[in-house]
Image (cartoon, each protein chain N blue to C red):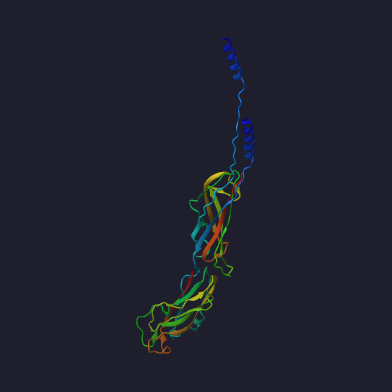
Length: 191
Length: 158
C-alpha cells in the first residue's frame, strides 16, 4: 500500500517538474537626460567702431560724415537679447586743455543701430562744453524677443558743435585737426 | 542442535531476499526574471558653446556615475536601450537655430559596452548609462533648459 503511494507521488512530482520555466515581464528604467544652455551673443566685430575725420582750417565739418555707416554681419544671439549703442563725442584726437572763446574741439552726434530690434537703438552724445570729455554716453536698450542671427547697420547723423554755455553753436568754430569718435555696440542675452 | 541449525538456515534464507530501493526525483522551476532598474539623472550641467561661433563645443558627455546594480537570471536575457535627443521648449522660427540636441546613448554592464538588443545572459553587474557626443545638427542651439530620456529594458529569457 505504502509503495503504491510513493509511486503516485513520484508521478505527481515528475509531472510538476516537467513544466517549462517561465520568463517574467521585462524591467524598464527611464533615465532623465538634462542640461542647461545659457544665453549667448556672438559679435564678429568686438572692437569699437571709430568715426574719423579731419577738420580743415575753415573749421567746417565734412558733410560726408552724415553718410558714414558700418555694416556688421554675422551677429548671433541664441536667446532673446537687448541691443545698446554707446558713443563718445567726436573730439580732437589730441585735445587742448583750453580754447579761445568761440572755439570748440567737440562735436555731438547721434549713432543709430538698425536691423536687430523692432525699433532702432540709438544714442546722442551729450557734451555741453567746447572742450568736451571722454564720457561714454549710453542709449536706451532695445529688445529682440527671439533668438536671432542677422546684420546690423550703424549710421551717424545730427552733428552739432558743442559749445560752452551761453555761446551759440552756430558761432563756435572747430579748431582744425584730426578728430575721432568711438561707437560701441552691445548685444546682451536676456536668458 | 539440529533444530538450531535449521533455524539458522531459515534466517539465512530470509537475509538472501533482495533489498527494495526507492529513488526520489527532486525537481523545481526557477523562472527567468530581471531586477528592477534604479534610475538616476544624466546631467550635462551647463552645456558649452563656442564664444566665437555660438555652436556646441564637441565631445560633451554625461553619465550616471557609479551606476546601479542589476541582474538577470535567464541565460538568454537581453538588454536594449533607446533615446538620443534632448529638447528645450524655447523655440524660434529662425531656421539657423535648433531646439533639439542629439547624443549617442551608451550602456555598460560591469564595465563592458553593451549594444542595444544584445543577449547579456544570466548576469549580475553594475549598469552605467551614458549620453555621449552632444551634437547640434550643424545649427545654433537655442538657449534654455534641455531634457530627454534614455530608456533601458532588461528582458528575461530562459
